[in-house]
Image (cartoon, rainbow, N blue to C red; front, side, top):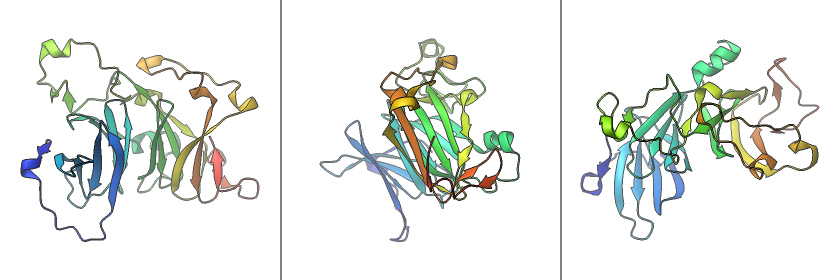
Length: 255
């Protein structure tokens, strides 16, 4: 379903207990996820400027909204897919499923019902926490990765785009996920990842940190390299040896 306007706002019969996910201002507008829809509202008037469906599943529930440049990454409760929408038009630009990536790394054993439970953009990377305790980091790029076909190309359905517009250089403000460069952290949790935050790094934490620009991925600045990402969840697991080590580490582990 494409973006709608304030003239045709859909009605909803959702129970009062349905969760509402809100994103701080995106281009002076508030993005509000309710059920399977995102409503874009004006913060002063409260008027709904436009709306669109994130998933065709009417029982779906928008859970996370994170903004970077001209894009907003959105997750849906109980799903392993992430969707990138244009911050101005609301068009779907990219869809990424993290489950195949985790299965390639660890096999099918530890990943039943993989779902996104935490989402953040830190240092031009998309950080994803899962219901099975994994933390995944995907660099953001100005170009769409090969083999990751967009739903929309320059504002038109894939395969129907204007060849003149398609010849334009990529928009550097669109934060595409460079999935071939995705990384998974071997330090995780016994249960769902609850949050992902950043803290300043000091001393030796900065040494040995490098960055590449493969696949158009942005190279972090010197300030960005002086940060640590901290995940929160129950217990600690080193997935290389697949056993908890709670006696040595707390429930919060730096990555």
